[in-house]
Amino acid sequence: MREEGLSLGETMATFYYHLKRMENLDKYQEVKEEIKTIYHENKGRYGYRRITAELHNRGFHLNHKTIQRLMKQLGLICRVRAKKYRSYKGEVGKIAPNLLQRDFYAEKPNQKWGNRCYRIQSVRAKTVSVRPSGFTQQLSDQLYHFRTSCFKDGNQYVG
Image (cartoon, rainbow, N blue to C red):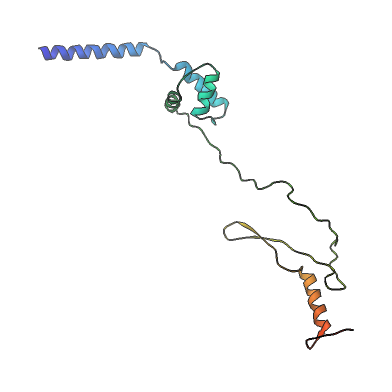
């Protein structure tokens, strides 16, 4: 009988404990509403650290662990956006004046020099800049023909 009384007493205590807890409103109800407001004002980009700082600014002084737990209960997760890669850095270096004006004809060697830069898309989708050494194709062809006409049998032809 004593065992039944103890178990009944414990059951009664548990019953009243739960009854009292049901009567009490949520201790953090006001804070939860404020967390939701801050979260939605910032389009879901604030995590628990920034929300904790904002709550401190608004007069709610709670531990960051409490804010983290409440956010987890509310199902609020910070959405981090991936940053886009931006390689543009403005005008870098100097732009040389266009002295040739696309007139690549040269009457003598070393009169006009040029350089081309090709951009090639590689297999791994990386852009590679390639600069061929020497002159532009037209200029190198002209110089080759000029040199072959100036040399005969390994000796320099003057004429």
